[in-house]
Image (cartoon, rainbow, N blue to C red; front, side):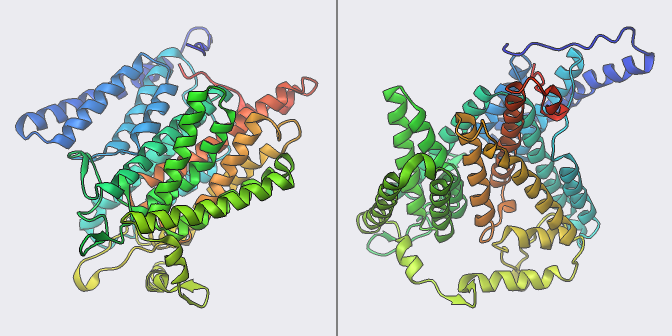
Length: 502
């Protein structure tokens, strides 16, 4: 493939080294064979469509032994948005466990580095350590398995980050991955638009459905007050996904030279914007406005005052027009009406006082290491509401140290994202891509003030995908800047050198 194997010829290997190499090659293969045998035996006795999907995924991943590992990242960039629950967890956690195992086999057999250091290693290590520490604070033994599943999911999201960082290791791969993720986002948004006209229907029975029977609305002479959730079955998560990626779609439309490709990206922008508005989600709409505002600030010198004014006018007119059409001609609720009816208690929206306050109060019962990675909503009189705040979620589940570890990861990612401002990079295609990635990060962090990404098996991968795109893009950018300055070859740190993905 594009990147050949880089073998390390270090002469005769000690016996212990050969034993370790043999173990690294065989143990993952044996483990996968055992898991496959377990699945096959289980389905022979009691067939289940979700477990069968797991077997299909394992068959697909077997093909990854034949292809460059970057295609595993591309594949996951599509499949993660359409997970399926299986008997031992989620298809996402299973798939993102198998992919690193495949890489371990290929790396040891080809004698290439198994892993390369990233700027986030210490922060990620601390973050995962806090998950383990929080396990010791789990009060009910019955919930221990749920906490372990959450830890497994978190490990798989971090594995996704490292897969992006290692295999999406040049500019073309980075842009290709960005396009793939935007296509995935468009497909998800399309399911939300379909839900406007066919609420409650199943697109693929047993896999991709469209939320509740009436899509969260009420039934009068017709369905009213619909807030679409599409295949995500969550209007908040779906709206966040769209707001965080719509600027990339606009950028790919600008870059496109082929008329068909340009038309596709314009349609993708329209579909995504319509779906976001149809969710009537105030937080995501605020994030959308923030993203476009930051884009105008970041690229003001390239756009000019006249073009910026036209963009603002077109944006306001489009927002009002789409909201009006959706609320009057379809069964969707108006997001502008929801904004006008918002009430505050101090600086807190009234519908958050019932979640933020109780969550904070309970979090202070175990302030340092939290109640455990799994958030138990309880039953009956003990039932609690989701925190609806990603930072409070970590404070409750992982404690103060866990929340600070996550913020440490975020701070390191933001530091990496600032590379786009470097002279010689700022006005390039790559610099613009990284700038948009920084906007993605900032919008994501703001949106976490009113939602929690940790509750499902999709959004955590979006978060760590953002981290991976930024850190990988920064490494590519630094390598490019170093190549442009041959007089100072030492400027390229070891952590930014490309490694093979064969």
